[in-house]
Image (cartoon, rainbow, N blue to C red; front, top):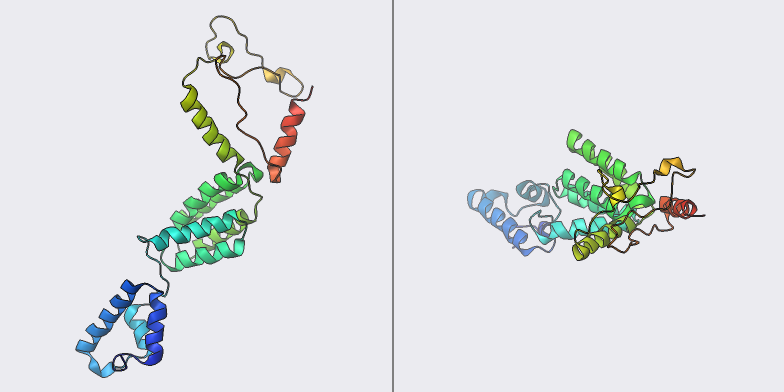
Length: 241
């Protein structure tokens, strides 16, 4: 190996492969190909090695487990309210060649799934961030992504609307298409009169919005975090008699 690479160059090549044996052997193939046509350059120093294999030093293949593992670590860091770790994984992805639009789209999902009504500004900001990424592109759009990432990571978290949706979906699958209340149909037939909430002081009146054959459910249970605490208090106030 001393005939091909200087000692520090060999160590650099190992770090460049980052534990990926396939990458290491690919790099060595490049070294051997160069040796066949230009033996006078050997043993290679680190600078020449960098020029030979390119400037990418991160193990990140968008078609491999590394892609899915890194985006998973990124999302879990935002969900876990660690903006610094989230930025670290974002940097790894972008430096490794990840599509910034892919990252932005995942943040739009996270804004509703993990933050929801605890911070209603999360989804509009995530949407604006995605639009900025699509309009501007790299490298400048990384600044937009960084703003969105740090904001979402610093938001109060709630998955209550996300969980409520899946409970409602499962309930519909279980109960099927029950007949709608007569009072709620666009064309009322038979008995049943819709009561207009705005005719009352709180713009609320107690009436059933559920099909008669279906037991009313309690899917959405706002948390006591962020804006959902206000929603919780409002719903309680609304139903006070």
